[in-house]
Amino acid sequence: MTTALRICFLILVILPMTSTALAADPVTVRGRVILDKNANGQLDADEKGLAGVAITDGMQFVTTGDDGSFEIKTLNDPVLPYKPAQVVSVSWGTGYWPTGLWYRRLADIKPGEVLMFGLRPDEQKIPFAMVQTTDPHNNFTGELSQWFRDEVKRLGSSVKFAIVTGDLGYAGVDSADAMFTSIQGFTRSFPITMFHTPGNHDIVAIHTVDWKKQTELHGSGAYTKYLGPIRWSFDYAGCHFVGLDWVFEEKDGKLEGGMPNSCIDWMEKDFSRLKPGTRIFPFCHSQWCPNEKFYDLLRKHKMELFLAGHSHQNLDVSSDGLKMLTTVNLLGKEAPFRVLHVYEGGHDVVDRCAGTLPNHRRDCDLHVPGPIASLKRETVELANQTVADKQAIKVGNIRAPWIELEAEFAPPTTGTCGVRLTSDDPAVKPVEVRFEKNSLICGGLTVPEVRLQDGDKYRLRIHALNGYLQVRVNDRVHFERPLSTDKPWGMELISDGGSANFSKVQLWKLIDNDPKLLEDMAQWHGYGRQQRQVKEYKDAIQRVKGK
Image 1 (cartoon, rainbow, N blue to C red):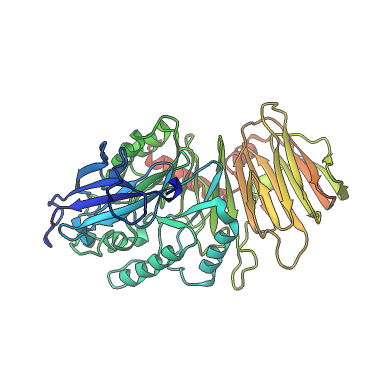
Image 2 (tube, helix red, strand yellow):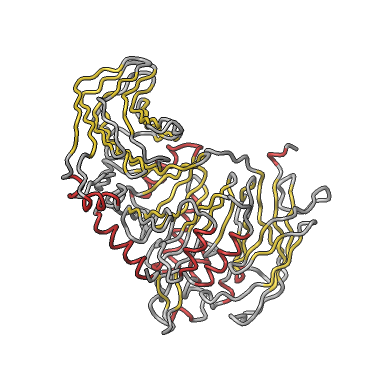
């Protein structure tokens, strides 16, 4: 039997739990992690335990011993007062992937039942990609959800998993079962493994004290019944992905949106397990937290990127050195999902848009706020510029830290063409935006079906602005990558494998030094449809943090 066919199974034994088990009743879970060579779900004579696997109840972690065994005495979570709704799950490391359910809710475990969670060896390499969407609000049966499924299929095997950051529907006592059954079905039929984090609209009886009722649906009970733990983590290719919950109890006993202290404490324990320098990517419904400790932890462990939703807008809400983005809802008018492409030393973010999807207006608008659009510029224009095979044509002599290009062109019938950005910093490699037939190639990630059905040209807009590269193509793709320098940039037209005709090229740079306008520009990274909304969001975070 080859290594690729070896399966790792987590065997749990839970002590009997009576039907009256509530918040005060501890539940002890015992189990063992084993490598299952024949994938039969059983511990056979030639199989042994696997040491060092992390197990969590959402409050603490334990690890398996030398023989793969463990014991965890579940702690009580203040935001899960109905004890049977609590979940025990595995937090697997690099090189493994679940073969089925990787969690079990205490309510679903029969007295004396032995549970098995399968993990298989998985070849994991950088670069890789994953997708994030958010706030679908019960849109799991319409044409847009089908488009989302189809788009992920088109992206191919480079995309490894998906995360949906909450507000899956509108959970009520009478509607929760039907709502989460639909979401569960969509999740299980998705072409890649899909994970969830809960949003405020996924909590039954939020904004009231009824969320504490001892039923399987109230509070986060319905969520854990169908989708598993409210907080979780795993590693992929040496990177750490963590899902967080986003509701806390106010002084009046009501449940409101915000990071609970139990989640922050769990996150601290989770991060403390990691090797120094591990790249961390948190996901949550929102980055807003009433506790400064949350932001301190992200800074301490040098979190790389935080993706969330809730705002129903594509915004860059980075603050105090923390890179944080919010994503528009799946029903929104911008990019319904993002692709995170992770490579050695950095990452790209690609917004994928629905373009001409019938009955929907979906585009990746790259709006420039009014003050910035009015800045004085030095401009170069080219028309009907043909770029031969293996040729690079400099677009004027413009070089600046803030530079923009707009172009229309037809790609070659074979090979690739596009734009190359070159930096005055000799330590920074050129960045290329290439096109091949109907695909965009940027940062090592290929995004298919970029052109609209009614046209044979690409409409391209590129910004190199405040340390970020933003690319918009045909209202269907918005690509963003951090740039590692604030030195001036220049642009070249390139072709490889055939000649390309650029019918229109405009390149310009900022030449206005008005401090107020520069301040406005510094607050805008291309994601916000309105710069004012970005500022309001940042101001709200600063008010909470008391700064």
